Amino acid sequence: MKIMTWNVNGIRAALGKRALEWGFDRSPDALCLQEVKAKPDQLNPGQLADLKLPYAWNPAERAGYSGVTTFYKNPPDEIVMGMGTPKFDVEGRVVQTRWENLRLFNIYFPSGSRGHERVGYKLAFYEALLNLLDALHKKGEHLILTGDFNTAHQPIDLKNAKENKNTSGFLPEEREWVDAYLRHGFVDAFRQLYPEKVQYTWWTTRLNARQRGIGWRLDYFLVSEALMSRVRDVVIHDGVMGSDHCPVELVLD
Image (tube, rainbow, N blue to C red; front, side, top):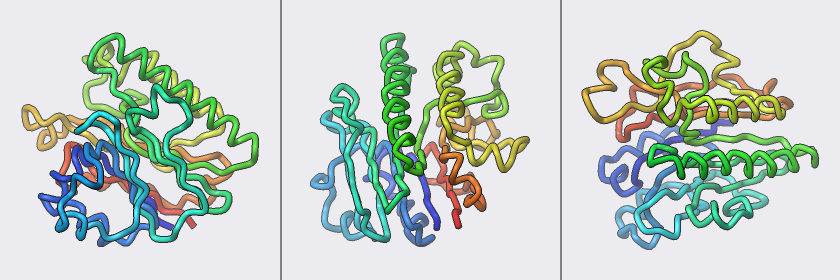
């Protein structure tokens, strides 16, 4: 089973660059896109024809902002838009898809880069989502969380850790929430498999950062501890262009 995640920074722009062809050609069981910045009715017929799989699409109420879409090979047993918290769900940040006892969360976590108020909103989002996940774990569900977490967890996960200690995305209070998820029954699958590997998934578009290797690992697969034995690989496709993020792929038995 292959699940892919990719913050495409605008699905219409990605389609215009033919970037999504790469993802569909790999024939994933699920392809999770974040920051799609559009609703399906904003795509023209040619763009819609380029979407090679059925989808669950959760746009933000605000036009041209946020939004997540999960494409799937096999129809899910259940699709849930959002997480049941209106102040977060209006921003189109979560799609849940469930196949039997496996529930996949496609998530675009808020950024805190627009000031203190948004940092607070981001931390509240982490908390509200974790409360939901705890309840699902208590019911015995196996969970996969993927998407743009907008947080680099450890110094190994960004090029210039010391210089960014006061930057949203690497604030101690943001990183602590990732720790909290790991204490609540989740495993960072990439870091578990590759404890010392330095690889990034996002680069600022300024100052040739990508070419210079100045990046952050912001895109994750967190899996329930009970699922980790099924994980065969997590691949960061940092050579794939088309966005300021690159795709990440989870391979499961």
